[in-house]
Length: 139
Image (cartoon, rainbow, N blue to C red):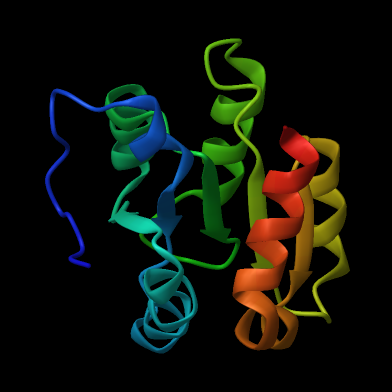
């Protein structure tokens, strides 16, 4: 399984069901996500900037979006707002993680419609399970 870094103009529904848009630039966490999802047949697409989120969601129609709420390269709150307020994207589930101590971030993410927010530790330990739980609920 390879990691695609360029969106392809053509995709099929089967590919979309396994595509995960990852808004995580932390090398450690990206490696954890990759390690958890690639062996299960997921295709990862990395969003490095705020504009990548919208562009890649439009191009790829991912099954789920993963966001680090503390990533400095991506305005996670704006990304979440865009994904949940635009009716073209509103059904795409968003899994986010943040520090357990940052209650304000958790509350704001919830108010913007995040499907699930977890601690950094839980994301690290249960990435595959979390993704599969959310995707099972989205069907």
